[in-house]
Image (tube, rainbow, N blue to C red; front, side):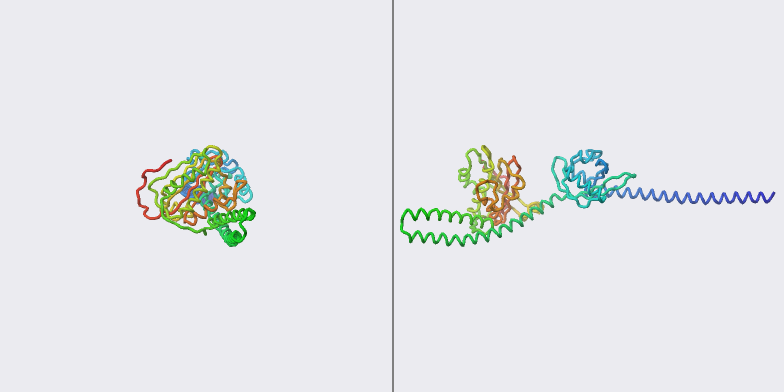
Length: 413
């Protein structure tokens, strides 16, 4: 009987031991589970913190629909939308990406699961289109595929790169133009000089004059052409003096009005208090005449051209928007017209020698303007939209005392 009781006790002790070991294992598993859950919570907190504090715009979208499930503050700032306007809506519904760019992104994600620095157009609230670099990756959330989108706005960087490339191209063309102009000048000097000698030695008769006159006319026309080429190449002869740009425009108004169609209204806004500039008046007259003539040609029938001057302080920040300028005081000459405007391709090429949208004409006027302004250490910018007109802004460094008070009366015509 005692033996049966001993066996029963041993069996019970064994079961108790196993139970204790099982409880100990459960406690270890529970501790591990708690540690994993705590790590997950900490990881989620870190992710959320990094997500919302990131200096980069970030969004999480459903892979299948493109529906936004979360965005950070920088994404809202970039798009100009409030978070409630974005969450729950799809990127196609918001029209954030053009169809072609969105298809490129989908192909990248389908082929490799990620996109690295894909350049895309990005339309924000209000319709402004930016250029962004897209970094995206497919991630899993509770077994479902989502896309983590990180954007970098490169709109300004791209604009500056285009400006630098354009400036390099213009410098290369200017070097070529200078070489051609010098060769033409050398040849024309001999032609015009010998024509003068022929007039002296040939008998004075109408027949000789009939042949010599058109030759001299053509030669002088070519000489003017080379002068424009040299102006573009920034190698023209300059005789600078200090004067008020407002007074200068006022003085040549009769010439400007005479040169444009009477149906076009010429307005001016010329403050008395503009800083003086140091420039060649003859060259500046060529500049203003060419810009106004260009504006007049863009107007069909009745229209308006407005010429204005003003002081402009270029700060360090503003200089980054104007690569041709250094910080300091400038005088701005602005010419607005309400003509037919230009597309982007025409606007980008308008300062190239011989580029013209007209069937007739040599297309050198605006090229010469570019060279003259650059030779005065200034800058010229053109903004234009088809059907909405064109704005030309010219900046020249201020000369002398620039501490005079702003806001004095203007001469408006």
